Length: 307
Image (cartoon, rainbow, N blue to C red; front, side, top):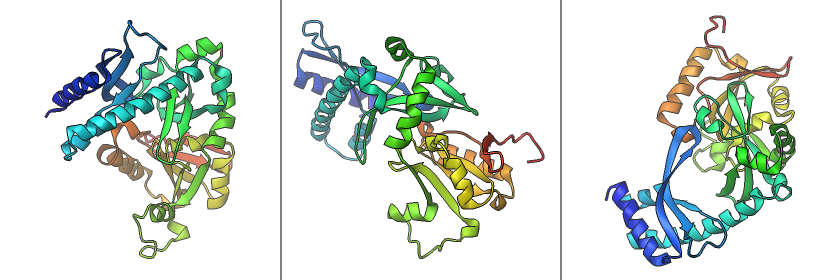
């Protein structure tokens, strides 16, 4: 089946299982970097309005499962389970979104590309940061492999009678507390994931590459915003350094003395973005420079021939 045929078949099956109390319809949602996710929207019918909750279950991964041989019956069962989880999360989201006192301790920030997401940012409170944007999300719950959140939109600020500055105040405290940072060598990170045998490539402090992320490795690029983190990294490295935006989930750190050609570094970032990353995970296409003396992070201006 094509994706569209699969979507219609799952809509038919799920609608038949749930009955007329809920209307199941296809839905396309715009996500980070103007990417799109396809799913099924579950909306309570006027005959049984209940609470105004309309969860979405995304189908993209289920379609991949189907293409890999998972039966439609198995996918149907998993979809119904996912709907139950989404329904629970939507109920919590409704409670949090209507009560700021309930949600204020769970609001955190993320970093995204400002230019690519300029349309989406029109509806989201955000703060410009270099050529990026700080946006805000409320964590509903998270486990080792799941972080359920909802984005803070302009209507939330209106409902809560808050300004963007108020969100910043809370997230500056919440984000490092809820998502502590992790700063490790690339070898250590790969070794912990089981993808790397550290004995094959011993660490060399003079040519080391480091990973900065959070301990959940989700949206960890925002760790560059944590108080004192960049300064502490500078002390550890003992010199200025470049920040490589490898994705929205982490950044790489390399000493300035190890970087002979920043133009080539930028080319590598663009190549990785084009060939190795999902579009939704791209953060930026050029490096950033941290100056230990001034304690500042700046975008690298590749038009400057002196760089």
